[in-house]
Length: 283
Image (cartoon, rainbow, N blue to C red; front, side):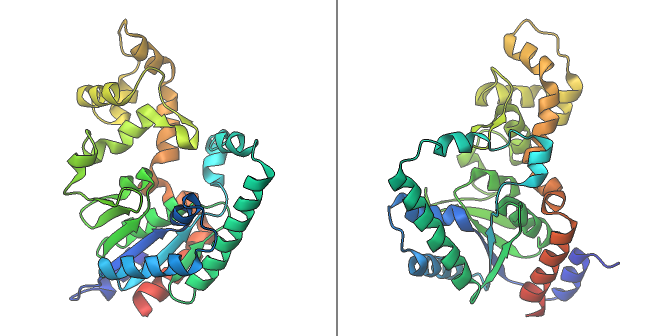
């Protein structure tokens, strides 16, 4: 069977396929939630159109979360469980505001379908949909719109990120302005320090500085794992030895590029591929 990437390459031969804007739908919607504005449908659509024009993107794919990732929940049941704790003490006013916000968000997604490709699957996260686009359509220039630094795992020579919060771009060319570790070691860095926002634990005692030192000394997360147990009197090394299996769990949870298809799921992926082909290639 001909792969999607081969079909894309054949379709795009001898021509510049152009630029794609990939939008983290819910992440962008929170721009108006933080402003206390609950009637943002028009502003949202105009913002997406403006960004597409700024980055000369003839195609726009809106990637939307639909609940937490069932793939990650199976790997690590505590994944994002901290978010329930965060919202359990909401006041009635706050609950109402969230209901109104999500109602406007759903209305906005429906309106966006008239102009762009909106992709959304039950228990699949926008990160994985974006990752699949980034790795499959690497012959396009891709601009991702999200304030989520997890999306920087996808940054490469043809894929960059714009944050509406910082108003800054993260590209392969300015990577060193944002991070102290090389692009290829970013996933190893994240596996070591964890992600408190997603309730993914790092190794106790290892922060950004020690994570960088370990990478410089041993290499990738796999090299570090293979080196354990490491003989040392330091507590953070002892902690690493005791919890090195967490590194492999974290890699499966965090690595978007290599696990996005599994996270999307076979049936969803078939539908997603079809929709992408129709929107990006056939049209």
